[in-house]
Image (cartoon, rainbow, N blue to C red; front, side, top):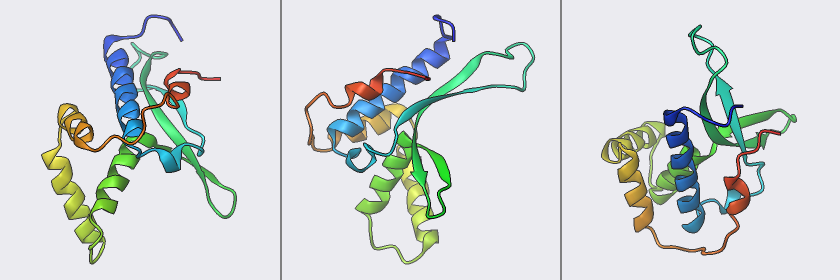
Length: 139
């Protein structure tokens, strides 16, 4: 990977790191810390002009099911959705959950609003345990 990344990619990485720090300080990452958090980069193959350029780098974590099959899940948005669902536990069925999530995502539809919402939550951790995940390493 080249040293100079495109501006949208740098902005995306900065936002992912900011969200990771906030989620860690608010105590929402406690159950995900030992699930193999790692950075993943994906290439775009649709355009010939940018054939080998990385277009998105995101944090993922691993889960393994009963049969030993592993899956990769997006960390930041899964943690936020789990927190929103756990905060509202009187759902009758899956349609109620989906409707509530849809309304929540409509209310907090920008990154600025989501960061403001996360900043309004009480802080539970002030240590530097998140620093090991802030370094992007693809090895």
